[in-house]
Every structure is written in C-alpha cells, then in structure tokens.
Length: 199
Ligand SMILES: Cc1cc2nc3c(=O)[nH]c(=O)nc-3n(C[C@H](O)[C@H](O)[C@H](O)COP(=O)(O)OP(=O)(O)OC[C@H]3O[C@@H](n4cnc5c(N)ncnc54)[C@H](O)[C@@H]3O)c2cc1C
Image (cartoon, rainbow, N blue to C red; front, side):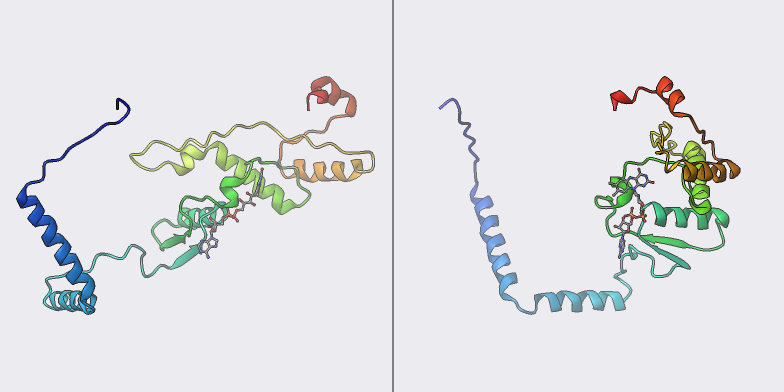
C-alpha cells in the first residue's frame, strides 16, 4: 500500500453541472457542419466593420533579396549583402529547419584550412579564417552579448608522398603568394616535431 499514492477530489454539484454543460456544448459543436463557416462569417463581418484586425504576417510578403536556406552559405550571403549597404535594401533568409538539425553546417567538423590548389578556395578560406577570428566584432548585436563560437585555431598537416611532392610544393607557392600562413617541413623535421605514432 505504501507504494501507492491516492488523491481524492471533492466534486460539487455545481462542478458536475459545468462538466455536463461542457460535454453538451462540445457535442453540439461536433454535430454542427457549418460551425467553421459560421465562425469565418462572423469574423469577416467584424473585419468589414473594422472591429477585427488580421494579425501581422509572420513572414514579410516582400523583400528585395530572398535567400533560400540559412546554412553557412545562405547566412554568409545575406550578411555580406546587408553589410555592404545596411539601409539600401531588405534581405530575407528563408530556412525550413530553424534548428538546423540536418544542415551540413551544424553537422560539419568545422575545420578550416588554406592548403588548397585553387586560388578562389585559398582566398575564401583566408577570408573565413579572418572573419572567425574576429567574429565578436563582426557579429555582435547591439545590447546583446557577443557570440562565442569557441573557435580553436589548431592547424592542418598535409603529408605528401615523393610522387606528390612536386604538386604540394606548387600549391604551397600559390598559397604563400596569396598571403596564406603555410609552411613546408622535411620529413625529418616533422618527425622531430610530432610523434605520428600517437595518431
Ligand atoms: C560530416 C561533415 C563534416 C564536414 N566537415 C567540414 C570541415 O571540417 N570543414 C569544412 O570546411 N567543411 C566541412 N564540411 C562541409 C561543410 O559543412 C559544407 O560544405 C557547408 O556547411 C555547406 O553549407 P551550405 O550552407 O551550402 O549547406 P547547409 O549547411 O546544408 O545549409 C543549407 C540549408 O538550406 C536549407 N534548405 C534547403 N532547401 C530549402 C528550401 N527549399 N527552403 C528553405 N530552406 C532550405 C536547409 O534546411 C539547410 O539549413 C562537412 C560536411 C559534413 C556533412
């Protein structure tokens, strides 16, 4: 008996009457096939008399620029557009999953590297690295705490076989020519710096 907790409620005859009336009303509502129509008719009548105001739409019906998808690409495009001319036009981002449960952006590892072989990719990454390092300055909103993205610069290590050495040195020349902070090491000095047995 100790394991059970009993709770009793006192129900007055007044309460019983309320319950009976509630059940009766509900039954009437279900039985009335024109209920929705009558409600709409009533509301439309009030709207025409100016007594009823439609709630403001949640999504603006117009925007000069509409970006579909608010992952890193969409958000970045919207941010850059607004940043260039904050008061000149409206930008709207439409995202179907506001919690970003299935976006690559939130599922990614989040590593940034500048060791690419294409100039465009190197420049994009250099820009992103600078942006993320100074994210508090770029994304702070008035009267709110600056965002903390927990950016942890670590570095990327790429290893090349002898066959891949020439390509890697060519890429390195392009990368450093564009200002990327990338260094090359000989195999021996890598061994001295990092114990690859740990990985
Ligand atoms: C496991 C994993 C690890 C990764 N690791 C790295 C890494 O370490 N470094 C790196 O640089 N890159 C990494 N990537 C790649 C990187 O995450 C993606 O290239 C990048 O996030 C793509 O961004 P996106 O905005 O194009 O796409 P998403 O982040 O997927 O955003 C697209 C958004 O569009 C929305 N959307 C789609 N269709 C509609 C629609 N019709 N209406 C409204 N909204 C819509 C989606 O809901 C989604 O939020 C990784 C990716 C994965 C999956």
